[in-house]
Image: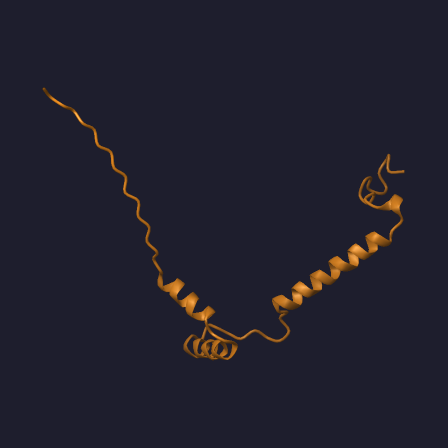
Amino acid sequence: MVLLQHKLSVKLSQRQILTPGLVQMVSVLALNKLELKDMINAEMVENPVLEELEDSVPLLDEVGKKEEDRERAAAARVSRSPPGQRGAAGAHPPGRPGAG
């Protein structure tokens, strides 16, 4: 008597591969402020294409703070407007028929 058997197997594996770029990123994240500044200065000496930003260029923190201030001011204006006018802005553009 002939006996037929089917066999199915599945193999699953997972590996973590750190590319050189990821290794550098992790090492930069581990630096404190002084070490980071030293590393940046060393990179700037090695690579003449790199340049230091002027003080006139706003930092991300400054830009974020200005945006938050604008949002707060806009929210304050909306909360101070009379209830009948809230949300009515832009319903009918001025100067178009039916806007009145």
